[in-house]
Every structure is written in C-alpha cells, then in structure tokens.
Amino acid sequence: MNLDTRSIAEKLLLRENHVFLVLTILLGVVGGLSAVLFTLAIDATRNVLFGAAPSPWRLLAVPTLVSLVTGYLLAKFFNDARGSGVPQTEAAYHLHQGVIPGRVVLGKFLTGALCVGSGHSMGREGPSVQIGAGIASVLGRWLRLSPARVQSLVPIGAAAALSAAFNTPVAAVLFALEEIIGDMNAALIGSTVVASVTAVIVERSILGNEPLFRVPAYHLVHPAELAGYAVLGIVGGVVSVLFCKLLLRARGFFKQMPEWTRTFQPAMGGLAIGVILVFVPQVMGVGYEHVDQALQGSLALKTLALLCGVKLVATIISYASGNAGGIFAPSLFLGAMTGGAVGIVIRAWAPFPTGDPGAYALVGMGTLFAGIIRVPMTSVFMIFELTQDYQILVPLMVANLLSFLISRHFQPKPVYHALLEQDGVHLPGAASRVTQGTWRARDIMVSDPVFIPVGSSIGAAWSVVEKDTSGAFLVGSREKLVGLVKRRDLEESARSGRVNVPVMSLVIPEPLHVHPDHSLELVLERFRGSPGLLPVLSRGEVHRVEGAITLETIVQFVRSD
Image (cartoon, rainbow, N blue to C red; front, side, top):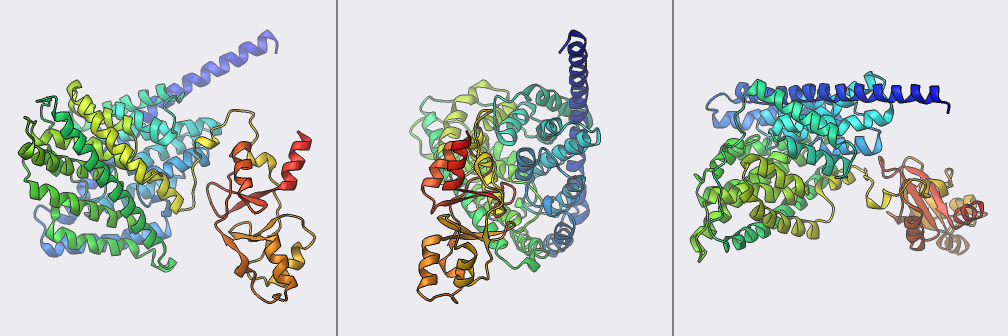
C-alpha cells in the first residue's frame, strides 16, 4: 500500500469513527426517549384500565380481556415480542449479526405496555432493552453500516434504554457487557458509557431528578452482622433457584400445549393473574411502590412473606403463559420482600445489634438479582448507584456471592440462556470463543449428509445407506433432525427379517452434537462419545442440520491439513 492510499484509508477510518461517535450519542437520546415513553405508556394504560380504585370484577376482567388482545397480536404479528426481550436481544447479537426487525420494536412497545399496564406481574426493563437494541439495529441498517457495526450498536442501544428505564447508568453499562455481550473486556465499553450517560440525561430532563426509590441511610451496626447478610445470601440463593426452576418448568408446560392454543395462552395467564389480583392487588405490574415500602421498613413480616410468595407465583404465570414483559423488576421485588423478612427475623433473634429491616431489603434486591439474572457485577453496582454509599459494598458482596454460588450450583444454566434453549436457540459459550485461525466444526463437516426419512421401514432405510460406511446415520430432514440410528443396529435388524418394522424403533433421540463454531478439540472430544457420526446443528434452530462429521471427514481433514 503506497503512502497516498494509506493516508486515504486512515482518513476514512477516522471519519467512520467520528460518525460512530455521533451515532452513539444519538442512540443515547433515542434509547432514553424510548424507555421514557414506554414507562409513560405503561402508567397511562394502567390508569385507563384500572382507575384510582378498581373493583374486584375489574381486577379480574382487565388482565383476562387485555390478554386476549395481546395474545392475538403476539401469535399473529409479533411472536418475537413475547417474554422479556433480553434473551432475544442476546440471540440477535450473537447469532444474527445484530439484526432485530423493526416490527419487533413496535410489537414489544405495544404488547409490553398492554401486558404490564393490564396488571401482569412483569417488569419494564427487559422490554426496554429489546426496544433500545431494536432501534439501534434498525438505525444501523437504515444507514447501511457494515454488519459488524450494526452488531456493535445492539448492546449500545440496550444499555441506553436500560439506563433510562432504571436510572442507573453504570449498572446499565455493566449489564450490556456481562449479559448481552458476555465479555467484561469488550471494546464497546466506551460507546456504551457515552450512550448510557446520554440516556440518563434525557430521562432526568423529562421525568425529573427524583430517585427511583427512597433509599434509607445505611450503616453496618456490628461486624457480626455480616453473618446476618450471609444468611440473607443463602435464603436469596434458595429463592432464586426456586424461581428459575419453576419458571422453566411452567414455561415448558405451556410450550407442550397444542399449537392452536398459543393465541389463548396469554389469556389463560391473564385469568389466573386476575384471580390473584382480587386477593393480593399489591403484586400488580412492576410494583416498585411496594418495594419502596419494604425499603422504609414499613411492612410487617407476614406481609413481606405473603408478597414474596404471591409475586413469585404471579410472575411465573405471567411469563410462562407467553405475555410480553420482563423478570428484571420482579427479581428486585422478590429481593426486597425476602430481604425485609430476613431482616425482621434476624433483628428479633440475633444476639448482636442489627440494622433496620429496610437495609436488608436493599441488600436483598441485589441478592435476588444476582441469583436470578446471574450478573453479579451489575447487581453490586446497581445497588451502589441507588445508595451512593460505600459502606453497603461489603455486606452486599457477601450476600450476592453466596446467592450467586447457590444458584449456579443448582441451576447451572443462567435463566435467560435456559429460556432460549427451550426455544431451540443455543448461544455460543466459552468453548466457542476460540482464537482467530483455530479450526472449527464448520471446517471439518460434510454439508450434504445422507438422511433417512422418518417414515421409512428398516428395509427401506438399509437399502438407502447399505453402501455408506459411516457408523451411524441421520434420521429426519435438514430442517428437523429426529435422531440417529447406528449402522450395526440397522444392518442386524434388516438381515434378521425385520424389514417392515419402522426405522424409528432403532432411533437414538437427542444425540451428541456440536455447533458450527465449536473448536476442533471439542469436536474430537464429543466424537469419541458418538456412535460414529456427529451432527452439526444450527445455534438459531437447534434441530436444523448444518452438516455432519464422521471418521472419514476427520481423516480427510487431517490429510488435507
């Protein structure tokens, strides 16, 4: 490259960086506005639908009837707008080069405002993340930026929206790095900071500089009180595991229902929520006003325990039935109630002086957030931003660490990732973060493997693969893998006269598999445990076959290398 060409390239790169900086600031403004408008839309929806003092019949009817409308919208037009939005944003960033369709933004805003505003026990922060990320994706593609640039805009937009939704800019940046990107050393940290701060400025200029919660002054009364916070960490970890496992089980139940019921599943959840609201209206919507009461220590032990249990059940029903809303706010609600209850018990029974239950409620918010969402750094800085008090860091880290470790032990897969896997989407993990130039599964696989149709008999299947020397064969189609059948089992059955028996009687369901970005080391490790064929499956559609790896393809790869 001569000097003139290099100079032009450097000028173009500098100009692109300037454009990206301006775009980052713009995303901070737009992301902040989107979060503010979403919050106002939820409040307006709630006021219109319930009024100042709703009757029991209204509490019962509103979630049910509104969920009929949102269920139809979600099933027919906005299927990607169900749930929190954070898992979908992660999938878009890691698997689809940051592409989030504009209809998802519109659908999330509309259905999210209706679902949360109609009383469903869900939060606004998760949907705000997907809305902000979606706006960033749409804007980047409209400006015809490169796919890499579009991808990098997604966490920036997500951080901006979350920063405005929760009024914690540092925690929003950490959440984008920990959860969306999955890398605390990501090169985008500067851009996310700029967007996050810009969004908070926009939010405070519109809604004022009032804090989200009235946080009491905190101080550690006695060093032994750290044992009390350790107890809170253990209890918080148990509640976190209970919430995650019940949520996944309930969502699995709804997903197993017939396809035609998907339109009505949100209304089924709405009816259940309506019944709950008749008796415990405090669990309606986001519920931050009751979190504030717990922080002030104005709730009795029975009330705290009741609200914690009912909120847990209500959130699981709302989310699992397919409504649009997040688990960010419910996690904080559960944490405040759990912490407040633990604080009252410890104050009554501890042989040493303790702080107010409100302090435990505050630490409990971070504790449950760390256990459920599984972002420990974000949870620490989130509570610190709310208090602006360094004294809370030590008890907060003690409780958060214990909750995080207990949750990770009993629920190894983070809840957002587990929710994606229920939808057949597998995000790349540490095994896929290999260095540039390392061989991967896509380099070894054959892209046109032989498939045995599901409806085949053993005789028909054997006639198709008799001359193939592979140790096993795929059963199904490229779009939907059903399983594997071993060559030995197929041959023995065919020669023993079972030619008319369905081949499905020999199928091994859910076989070992790899994804295209898995490393050679992982491929070889899993191939050793396979029956002689290793399917290579898509991350975005876990039953879609991208290729297959056999002993022959490995030998050919080694020889060519």
